[in-house]
Length: 266
Image 1 (cartoon, rainbow, N blue to C red):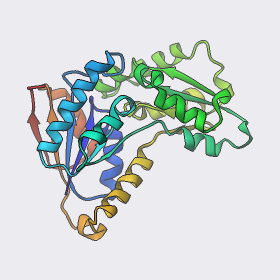
Image 2 (cartoon, rainbow, N blue to C red):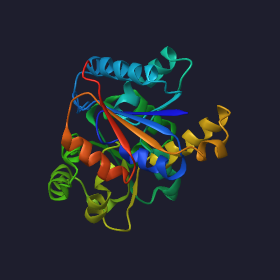
Image 3 (cartoon, one colour):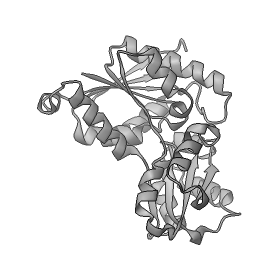
């Protein structure tokens, strides 16, 4: 069983590390680091990157692919599923429902942080409207966190200054829930917690995605025990050579044997 993970960069590792805790398998993680960041680029251009990279994962034999990128999911998930009908494709979306379910009686506001593309797509708007909580949610683009996260090791001071600047017109004390709607952002979970306080719940979708992945594996008749008997293997595919990316990827994922491939045709 080959499980593909796709993101523009390091963000998808926040989902991958959760998967590694629970599922033993052969993972192929493709990072389009050549074209990162996605969140502020032209939507159609980003779509072309997405389809090219998903083609690569399919051609490498992935039977199930996690689009571990909120931006890519928001603009392309339906089209991806229409094209790759024989591949199980799992998307990523801001875990707004988790915040809403915990926010009984709307006692606190919810802040959703994401990229510009994600904040502008109707997918997020429809999700918020479906939950009947639009009046209690603020949505804020934080694209500048992505390049800071790509450096990883680990510019918490820069992230702290950037987040505080973005929040200068917001009442920080009014929030009880922070939804990290970009897979890069959980790399700075501790920074968000320090800014908002320990009483504020900082939420991302990684556990929900992994739960979905496990369910899909079962549905594909891959017995859990069979999967768990497999030795975990990770292949990292980059669209641009970067020793820094490789080093940061290995720091985040831990002590696994990682093969690195460069796919520089994208």
